Length: 253
Image (tube, rainbow, N blue to C red; front, side, top):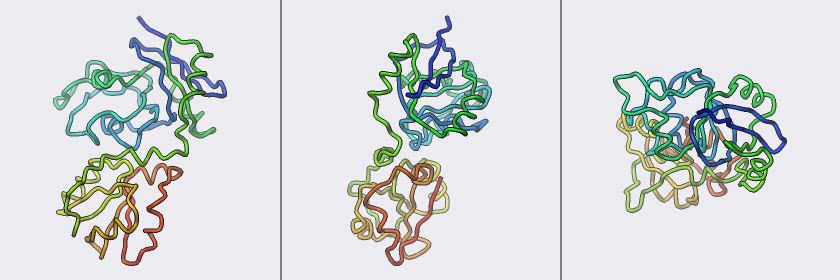
């Protein structure tokens, strides 16, 4: 049985979809992604933390999912919406459907949305906080949204990554300040025989310089993709580092 899914923001702008699933209302920054493939990579990308992803492609998950495509250990999004989600994928690589994967981690998803209209709205108005719910009155959904944390401009990038480098040697390695680094970023570097160490964004410039990182230049440090795609989510400790002599930066996405 289909249920009406409601997506709305604090201004009362509303979009409707449908779903056969049951889930609790959730909130997040509404964004869109136009990719026709790479659904697993998008859903597991740490830089999408706290966001509701609108997929503009017609059929989401038609080739299923494989753990080889993970950008992290699990889905990182707050919710996913689109035109339709495939429950029975067709691919020799598929280990399970994307819908069963999302349900496993209790990530809300819903089809039936006019994704073109949502994309045009976001293009004209920019991203903002939205609430997604089913079997709920719009007034109640707006109240849930009013009590939710507004992640626009917050420091969520500080916790988007997965730094675990205690007692890990750092000398001679390429350091990535982890603001939600994707596994593929690390793999590209490792495929070129570079050793990589993930750096907490809360690290001070002096702590990072003491790591004695080395690589293509005297010192190589890269910001992960969260820094590039969400410049308004700043960290306080790393800016002065970019002016340090013999320290080189790359921005990877």
